[in-house]
Length: 191
Image (cartoon, rainbow, N blue to C red; front, side, top):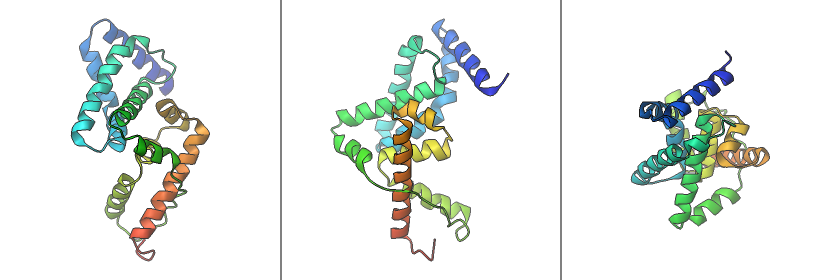
C-alpha cells in the first residue's frame, strides 16, 4: 500500500473510531498532529499561555467538527488549517490586526545559504532559529511549514487558504527578509 493511500486509510480508521466514541483514537490523532499544531501556533502567537489556550481550542474544534471532515486532504492538514484559522481569529480578537496586515504586506526576498561553511551547524541553527523568530508571524509559519515540516505548496495552501502563487511570493519575501536581517546583524565576513 503506497504512503498517501495508507495515510488516507489510517485517517479514515481513526476518524471512524472517534466518531464511535473511542477517545483513545482521538489521543492518537493528537499525537500525530501535535508537532504541526505546535509549529503553527508557536510561529503566529507570542505568549506561551495564549499558545496553550489556542492549541487546546484547536483540538476542541477538531473534535467537534470531526464528523464534517471530508477526507479531501490529510487529517493532519485539516487540523493544521484549524490551527491556522484559530490563530488568525485570536489575532483579530486581540486587536492585533496590525500584525496581520504587516504579515501580508511586508516585502522581502530569497535567502541563499552560503554560510554553513564558516559556522558550526549548531551555531548556524541557533542564529537561524532566532532570526526566523524575528520575522512576521506568517513568514515564520511559511518557512517552518516548507523547510522544517517539508509540506508541499498544496498542503500549505490547504492550511492557510492562500493560493500557491501567493505562498511562493510570501516564501520568497520571507527568505529575502531573513537574508537582509542576517546581513544587517552579522558582518558579511562572519557569514
